[in-house]
Image 1 (cartoon, rainbow, N blue to C red):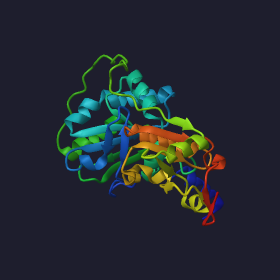
Image 2 (cartoon, rainbow, N blue to C red):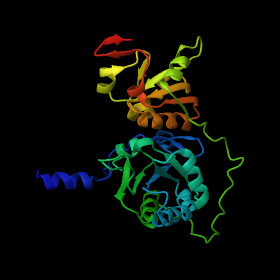
Image 3 (tube, one colour):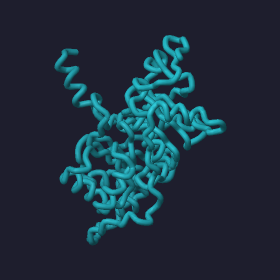
Length: 294
């Protein structure tokens, strides 16, 4: 393969393959509900509308088109979910502003989007893509770009063997008030190394230090108190921690751990901390090259 072909492949990475078993999506909705694809198997078809912007008017119109047809898809036993890397609070405001009739799912660092091949290979961002998963868990539609919802509607109507309810004209919903609509996720608390060490040293404090770097980074240098779960595995392994409160996240400089902390708050975690400066600013004991360093 030539260098040009390799570069083109990186830029034109195709989305999920039709006919294959769908990736087991598991993400948090903007209002805190945990959405798992497995829960819909045998009951509903699921449409994932992956989108790349919260500020682009064309994208807003596209999502609005999907929202206006939500009732039609519902009549065909089909649920719609939007996916983006923005945090739950941002997604909640965005959804209410547009009056969308479907949930928006928070995908930190585009981890699940990447698994569905709906993200960039070169950066953790979502790309406009529509993936449809049938009731039996197979990908039945997968296409990059701002796909017309009527195209997908016709496909699902054929599979279900019935027509969708007629599209009725409705007034655009007014932006919803945020007051009283559930409890917003707790804010991530920023701490320095000294404060983190104090929390970890508390008798019966129950704080856990979670290192979300790669295995090679962790093995080269880490705190002896740290539990290692890479950021891209956290959405599937967080239950190994046996708690979603009193967790302190750390990475090399503070960026990945901030995303990990936001994810934990999005699944109703409380007392979630991020260490400013990460291991680069860590002043406590560390294991370097297999040896404990004070």
